[in-house]
Image (cartoon, rainbow, N blue to C red):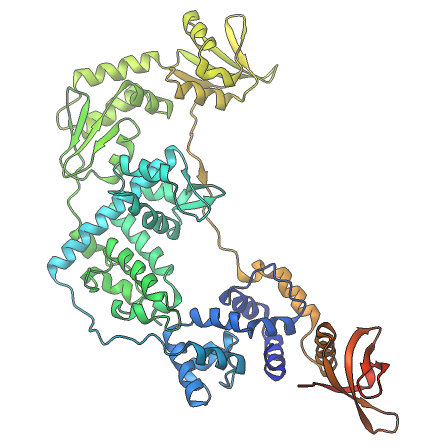
Length: 573
């Protein structure tokens, strides 16, 4: 247990903070909102426990860590610049006096990770060009991940990372080169608010879907700003940017594992063009590093040239002679499969991909107009035929909700198609039953529609008036909204406040309660009616009803003392 004087001093200090300050402290110290603390004395005691102090030291940025270590080793007060930070973290008083429990842990944890003498390197034009290429590639990979996540949510295992199946899925789709590249990409998407974890899946957010339709320059700018905001406190500069890369490994001197974490952040910065491999900052990154915005003009000039036209070929492929503009790429991939991504990207059309596009709301006319606009070779006859024939067949099967019976009805003008669906074993789970020329099911209409679409039937969804309904299978999550710390800790804050934290009587009762719990022997100083005092050495056994009960070690009798008469209590060594 921490010294009583330190515990009482800290509890009194905590009582003077408002809810916002207390909530920030609870968050910084990693306190669970479900903590069972009864009052601010409990909080002070917990904050000064060696394990809690050790965790707080791990999260202490370099400036405050060095100042704290110097104060402990020289047995002086903490220097003014770091004093307020350490007091806010409940590691020292506002006057800079380090709590004894903190000093003990600091002495055990010395020496600190020392900063290096490395010099901050400068970037060259070649470095800038290479960084822009890496940023461009990372943005394209992230777009691939989001598109795959729109098709079907990515699985999320207990640790929050992707499972093996989805890693392979990303590799096979060309989004990443190897399975190990998946987690950094997911982390960036999560930090940028483009995806959000929902139970066992990752879902694209509304912002993520908007991000897909932005230009490459806008995509990168959005991610760069979000990444900067997600930096750990120790890597940020006072101006809102970040400290030089050479100082990242020593940003958290007490945290022995920090250099490895810093290396992960550095690699992420390199992948997104914010650092060169040597740690220099490309020319367009300097404003970001200072806490300002992106120099968009300089950045855009560094990007590889994108194309807005492609070659449509008779073998039902499309070849883009360079990186295709993002908005065109996103739309093209709703109607064709991407087969390769390199200097020239290849897409392949099939009846299934054209059917999927029509299912998503395209028409034969909109498909022709789009392809004729972006094609350098016109619309080849084989591709035009696939579009027309697929569109003609599309809608052969209609799925509607029967309002009278609240059942789903599958309708077709082709009896043979209805007969085929009725015996299709892949659709047994729908429980389809014949009713005249139609099929009915108790499964919701949208689920029946997607089951038929997955089974490659030319199906459309219609409403009660017979008009086509466009269904979007993508599960889109709302953008995550940060929960204020005061809201997160509202219940705990209320309990801490109501428990009290100041006053001699409250502190005395707390000391007695600890003594009873530990069955400790204590010296109890009692005020007598004649204004004199007497000390009893008791083994504390009970506390309640405004009285302390204990066995008098000197007289070997049980005594009951009214709390109002107890002046002080002192533990016996």
